[in-house]
Length: 125
Image (cartoon, rainbow, N blue to C red; front, top):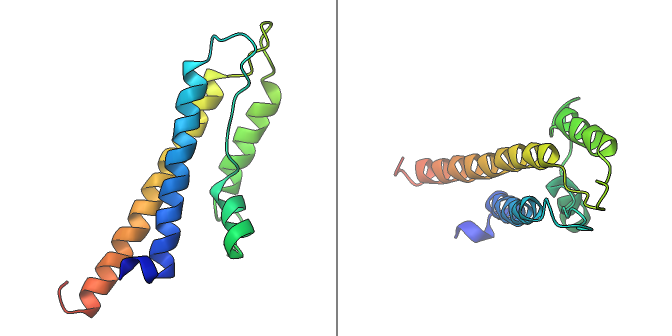
């Protein structure tokens, strides 16, 4: 029943994307001292969702966390490769982890809200 609702499908996709992205952040941190290792990341959920589903719309300036994303991108531009060719920045990975945590929290909040609405509509709230 829940998997057929668009909002829960989106929340599930957001949670899966956040999990995949967190796995890459963990891999980057594990290879922080590996010579020549290039940091990996996935595109933001917004970009992926727009490409696959037609996407989300920003309803006002700053909606969808544009300010945070710009700050992370500005930091990534400033941090270059280490002398050994490694591109992992632990500070950058910490910023990504915080952003991913927000994505996971949002996905859970969307799912809980949709679940509460459905329970209320069924008289089980």
